[in-house]
Structures are given as structure tokens and as C-alpha cells.
Amino acid sequence: MIGCSTVTLHEGLKKHKVDTGVRDGISTAERKNKKLRQAKEILRLASAFVAQAELDRLKKK
Image (tube, rainbow, N blue to C red; front, side):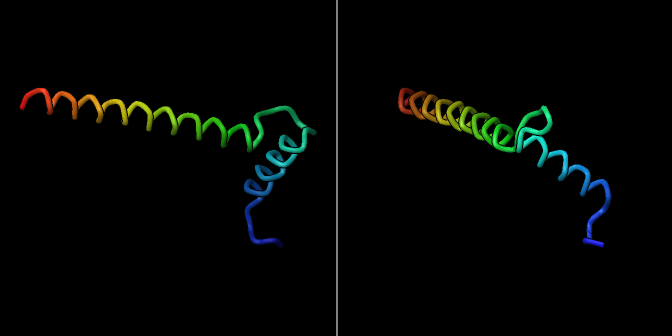
């Protein structure tokens, strides 16, 4: 016994097979890159929003 459920072990094995090219699918690296791109876009939009709000605030003075 290795201390994890069969489902956890099966999912880990599937991810390993995808990551090593034995099985088709989206690799762990590709998933991480997608999440990083999404986070970058959210931060870009938030930064633009804050900058615009600051400009609007300065114009009202």
C-alpha cells in the first residue's frame, strides 16, 4: 500500500503518460502555461482599470 486511493494513483499515471508522450492529451506544462497566460491577462486588465480610474480621479480635481 502506498497511501493513496486507486483513483489518485490512476489520475497520476494518466498525467505521467501524457507528460511523457505515451498518451495524447494536454501536458502538465501546457496546463500551467495556460493558467499563467490567464493570470497575466487578468493582471493586465486590472492594471489598465486601476490606471484609468486614477486618470479619472485626477481629471475631477
